[in-house]
Every structure is written in structure tokens, then in C-alpha cells.
Length: 226
Ligand SMILES: *[C@@H]1O[C@H](CO)[C@@H](O)[C@H](O)[C@H]1NC(C)=O
Ligand SMILES: *[C@@H]1O[C@H](CO)[C@@H](O)[C@H](O)[C@H]1NC(C)=O
Ligand SMILES: *[C@@H]1O[C@H](CO)[C@@H](O)[C@H](O)[C@H]1NC(C)=O
Image (tube, rainbow, N blue to C red; front, side):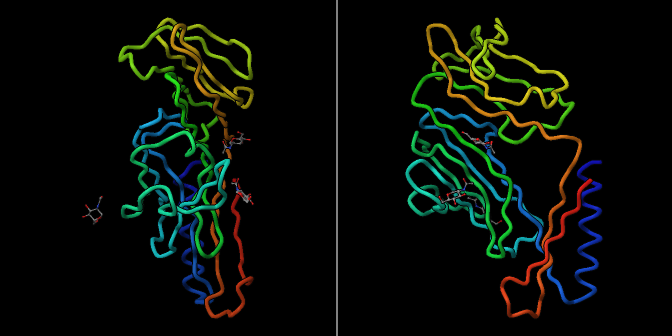
């Protein structure tokens, strides 16, 4: 089961919704982060975008940080540029969970971003990893351009020391899920980040809204699970 299959199912639903004229279909958006990682140095440039098939849905990027909840892009943080939200100089207090939300209710995947004022980060996938894929983790310093030897930890225990500063986990499985961090001797330790592994299953999520309904709660949700 793959994304193409999921798209095919969604397009069938699209057809049904259109034909019946009772429904409008809203697909959920996908939040992507560029550069695609979950840890950043203070001062980095980060761009987040809500990717969607239906641009009329009006997606809003929101976040929760330790200080504020549910604030949207442009509301004291970030700049909306077309359908992206750019944070040109990210700082520690931008650490938090980010998601896209539409007026109709559906929300996207969530991502955790962590910003450090320190000098080491772990470059790990910001989006869930598919079971069976290979994942490469990179331990990076802010100041040294070349890769230095690094130690990698999972859930607090040392798992590997790598002379080149990067580590590949081959054919990831659910048991690789956990909280990862790394350290580079003489430079320090990175923050910790979750690596999430998703199975071979894919959730196609779409919303059929009653077109002529005056009730807001008349929302029909269609989950297609494979
Ligand atoms: C964000 O904060 C609100 C209010 O505290 C809470 O209801 C919501 O579940 C939080 N969302 C996430 C994704 O953490
Ligand atoms: C925004 O989108 C318009 C039209 O697609 C494009 O011309 C413009 O360069 C974009 N702006 C930025 C800052 O990406
Ligand atoms: C975000 O981080 C919290 C703990 O810091 C964790 O419980 C949660 O699962 C993470 N969410 C994602 C989407 O990685």
C-alpha cells in the first residue's frame, strides 16, 4: 500500500462527493519543514508549509510552545509568504509543536521543532519514517564545517560511536522508535528528538462536508485505512 493507492482512493471519494452534490471534499494538509529536520541552531532560517490539494480550504499554521498555545503564523512569530510561514531567525522560544489547521476542523500531521542555543544538533527526520526504510542521523556542530566523531544515544543509553559523525539505521522497525540525541566531545550534547516509525499502513483522511447544511457539526469524516 502506498501513497499512490491512497491518492486513488481519495480521488474516488472526490468523485462521489462531487456527484452527489451534497458534499464538498476537504483533504487534510501535510505540514512540511524546510530544511527537513527537527533541530535547529539559534539563528537558522526555517520555512514551514501546509501542502494541500485543495487550496481553497484556508489552512492556518499554528503552534504550541511552552509559553503560548495555539498562536498562528504572523501572530508574534513567523511571516506568511504565499502558503509558507518563514521564521528568518529562529530562537529557543520557537521550540514547540507545529500543525496546520483548517476552518472546517481537520488538522495535519504535527511536527516538533527544537531550537538550541548550544553548538551541537542532531539532524534527524522531522516526519515519521516508514518501517523498512534506512534512516541517517547526523551529529553536527555549529562552527566546524567537517563532520567530527560523535556518540549517539537512544532513550538515554549509548548505542553507537561513529568516527564520521553520522549513523545509519538500516531497515527501521518499531523498536527503533525513541528519543535520540548525540554528543561531540569538546563541543557538547544535542537536544533530544523523537524518531517516529510508521507501519506499512497509511491513513487516507478526507472530510465530506454537507454542502447545504446550516449545521456546523454536520461533518462526515471518511477514514480509509489500509
Ligand atoms: C496546544 O495547546 C492547547 C491548549 O493548551 C491544547 O488543547 C492542544 O491539545 C495543544 N496541541 C498540541 C498539538 O499539543
Ligand atoms: C509568491 O507567489 C507568487 C505567485 O505564485 C510568486 O510570483 C512569488 O515569487 C512568491 N513569493 C515568494 C516570496 O515566494
Ligand atoms: C513531540 O514531543 C513530545 C515530547 O517532547 C512527544 O511526546 C510527542 O510524541 C512528539 N510529537 C511528535 C509528533 O513527534
